[in-house]
Length: 486
Image 1 (cartoon, rainbow, N blue to C red):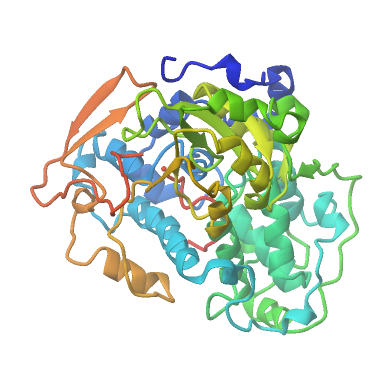
Image 2: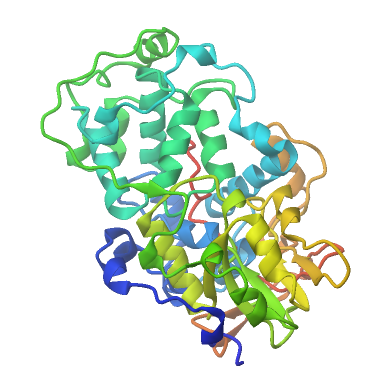
């Protein structure tokens, strides 16, 4: 079978694109690698640094493709450095590089803290029990009567994406004014984001809540008026006050009075932990022996939702791609648009799409010659349950994803400490160890190569560990779902 060609014998489902095109989210973020590269080519570092905090600023819009492994941090930065003018001499302290660092830092924290990031890292302004365990209906329905909040929720549902500043505002409003626990807000938001990443999303909510930082993130109506279009402005609401008043509210157990809604709001899109039928996944439970028979004696590339980039160079030439959703490794419920986004990218890779429990997958893979997957923190230690035990089990290969920054061995409790360690001694972005002196970017497909010669002697080759690695591959917009004041 030619790499990238669907193997219909593997139960290749058909994505109902009629369903997909009706989803507004996919009109904004098409599930294709060349769509990601079109956005990447349009990145303007100077404009990004100057206007990224504005809702109509030069944000890259790359975060859904980064979260799902379509683009890598080295791939993104390498393409930016190959841009016109002085792009190749971008300093390592540039805002765009700095924001890529935030995404890498959140991965660093999750790698060391594991599931602990799902709980408050330290006490916040109030005890955990002082906060409500659910997001109120008026917020979910965009009928709070506070324009900035209602517009943010409407935008989230319509696009599957939200500008970083709007995420900040939404999180701060929920936690500090409505007294909703940060975890409830984080779990709700990630279900509706195409770029939802547990490390970036949940640690960002902790940053806002002051359970992962030393002070709360607060905003007022003046801040909204400075960075958002007029329809978001919120004069005359409880946000129309000074920061001293807002901090006093944040430290009080009493929630802010609810403003009378001005309309009927919107309907929240449903979310599910399993792919909808229209996404074209076959349930392993419905055909327990079929996939095992198809994979007998073959090399398998297990394509999971967080690794949807091009084929790793270390794969055997005839490895067959199999799109995999593993129930135990997918605790977050997603809206249909995100399932369609993932399914579309799997389809582009020629991957048959299946879903089932770890036990189902273990049984299905038992007959393969070898199984390869790209590692990701979303997989966690539970991926070990996929390894079929006993004699004759397939050989397993867990490939490291490409990294942009040097690994930091210390457990850094703050971004500033991690950043200092990760960039020590570096002046230019091209010196980061994840960039090779010759960076080959496959834009728009495997047959279009662009060699990017970077001008600094100090650039090291691609980094790796004892496990298999390959050349550049995931990025971000600014770190995916991160909610940080800038």
